[in-house]
Image (tube, rainbow, N blue to C red; front, top):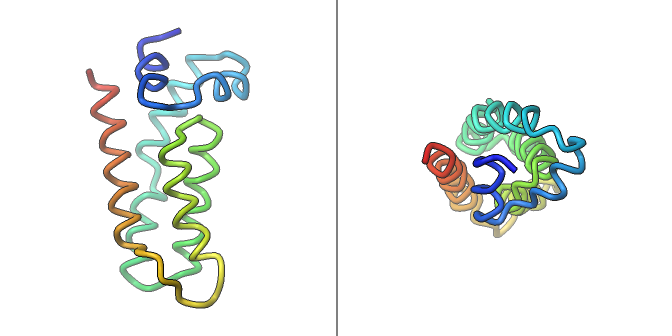
Length: 117
């Protein structure tokens, strides 16, 4: 295993599942991971939440959830899911969407720091 996958595993990522989905290709994983951290869906989600555009926020959160799941990033997957569910319906929810988004962005920043070590 590489330093990145070891660090992510220690951080709680499901690296066994991710490597299984990517057929053990750590180079591909590293590339996908780097692209994911820069994904425009993070900013799109924040902008949509600020604008009150539930449909766009749902799409961005759902996209992040899917990619995070494939990459085994369990914390971002969970946080994205916590955003997706209340956005799925057309009714306003009691969920703290801005707070969940802040937690999501904090986890993204943590992953960036983790991988710079």
